[in-house]
Image 1 (tube, each protein chain N blue to C red):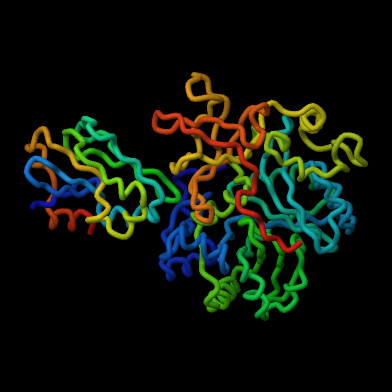
Image 2 (image 1 turned 120 degrees about the vertical axis):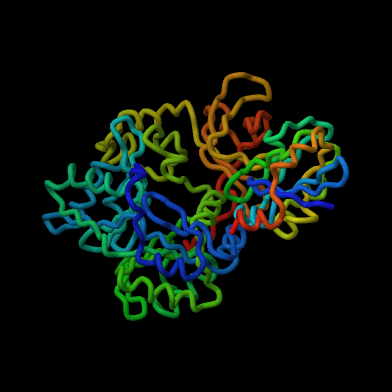
Length: 121
Length: 381
C-alpha cells in the first residue's frame, strides 16, 4: 500500500483503483480543534482540485480538495459523528472519503512521505 | 479603521511573554497578537469558563478626560455631546458601557467610561483608537484635556477563579461589584482595576504601566488556575455571551436601536428625559426609540452542527431569492457544544424562535432566532 501527499496537506492511501483520502497531522495541527466535518455525497463524481469536503475548526472553515478525479465510493460516517477524530488520529481513523480513481496517472505529481516532510519542514 | 497593510505590526508590552509561552501570533488591528497558545482555542475557552483566563488587551486605547474646570461633572457633560449614554450619573468608582455615534445615528466605536473621582477614564477599541482620540480632541478640547495613556498595558482576568487569583495581590477586589472601577494597588504596582470584561464571566480588567505588565502577568500566571488565552477564545467567549464585536456586529451603519443596545441608552438621554438628545444622530436614534427600526440584531442558533460564519446571507425561507439579512458573527460555541451566531434580520422576523435560513456552500440551513446571552453570564452584581 502506497501513501502519497498533496501540497494542500491531504494524504492518499492507494489500494488498487481506490484512494482513501484524509488530511495530514500537520494540517490538523494548523487548523486547531475541529468541530465540524462535511463529507461529499456517496456516488458523487469529483474532478481533481474540486472542493470535496469541509473541515471547520472553532475559528474557521477550510475546504478539502479532491486530490484526484473519480467517484466517491465510501465516506467516513464515524468522522462526521465525531469531528474531533481529525485532531486525535488524522492519519488513520479520521479518513474522509474513498474515491474510485478514473485516471491513476494523476497520481504522478503527488509527493511521497519524504518529499512531504520536506514540504512542511 | 485597520492599519495599512504595509505598516509594521506593533507589539504590546507582553509580546515577548506570548512568544515564550508558545503563542501563535496573528495581525490584529495593526498589532502582532496571540490568537491561541499551545492548549488551543477550545481548551482555552473552556478553561476560562471553568477556572480563569488571562487576556492581553493592551492593543485597546486608554484615555483620560479631564474638565478644565476641574469638575468631573463637566467632563461627563462634555462626553455626553458625543454619546447617547447618561454619563453624568456614573458615580465615582463606577463604569458604564457607551458608544460614539455619528450624525446618522450609526456607531463610530463602543467604549467603557469610568468615573475616577476627578476625571473620566475611557477604554476604546484598538482599530478605532486613533480616530476616537481625534474625535474627542476635535469636539471636546474647548472644555476638556484629553490624554492618551499609551504607556499603559491592559489585561483582562476572566472566569470563576479570577477573583481569588487577583485577591492574592489586591485584597480589596473581593468587595468590588460588576462595573466598579478605579485605581487599586496590585502587589506593589499602581493599577486601574475594573470588575468587568468581555467574556460573560465575572472578572477584571487591569490597566498597568507598560514596564510593570510582564511582572504582573507572570505573577498571575504562576497560579495554576490561570492560563493565558488568545484572541480566538476571546471571540468565541464574547459570542456565546451575546456581546457585540465592533466592526462586525455594530458599525457606522447600525444604530443602538438596530443593534439591540437600547438597554445601554439611559432614560435621561431618551425622548422626554432630563438631557434628551444632544448627541450626534439623536434625531434618528430617538425616532427609532419612538417608532422602532426596520431591522434588528438577534442571536441565532443553527439547527444543525455546521457553523454559520460572518457574511452568510439570511433568508426568510428555504427558497426565496432575496436575502433579508446577514450574519455578522458566527462560529462554534465550545460551552454550548453547538454553533452560534448573531446577525441582522427584519424586525418582523426578530422574535425568539422564528426560523430563518442561512446560505452556506449553496445550501439553505435553518437557524432559530434565540435570546442572548447564549450562555448565562456570571457577573457579580
